[in-house]
Image 1 (spheres, rainbow, N blue to C red):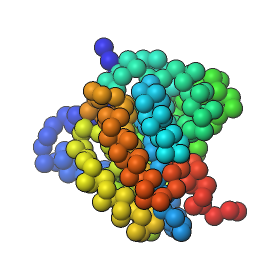
Image 2: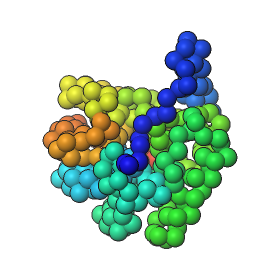
Image 3: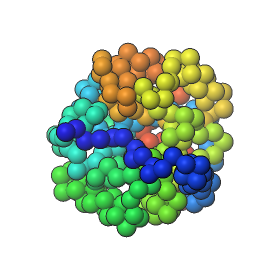
Length: 264
């Protein structure tokens, strides 16, 4: 059976359960922040792929290369080679080639864990295992960034991750403007779940250009018949072309952080 990317369901869909879910999300968004100003004369756009399915490299990477862009691939090394709802996950050789092509690798836990339904100790152990496995299979690489799988951030885990990674990416379907929480960067998902279309993307890219912000795009697989977590090659190419035409710097997550963070 394919590995599931689905968010676990709450035991009960009562008003109390929904209120608890909302409170958990708000606390993660508003507390435990590590804010930095976004001060750049040129807007920035980053492309990211979660779980690193093979098509994110073969199709996604090829499309981005046309526009001079490099991506950040958030990997769960415990899933390498497995079949998931987003397709076959990349191999160690695929990751090595991505590094050679100038892409970045980010951490996504070793086991694709959901912070909302995992103890902090177990979650952080999976993060540590992912880093150890990267050192074993690709000793020349390191994880500078992190992306939260499934439901997103939990406050206790968000704070702990902030002590390990330069930045951590979430969702939210908006850009980082004026300032950014490095422990929970906003991102726009390009997938069938969100129903994001070209009109929305153009407006978001234009706004990012006008406000000189940092816009992060995220998806999973890239193929003609994508999972509900992915997108088609045509749509990704449309987004990449729009990003390129906006005059934004097209940088991976780590490179964007390096540009924005003050030099000590």
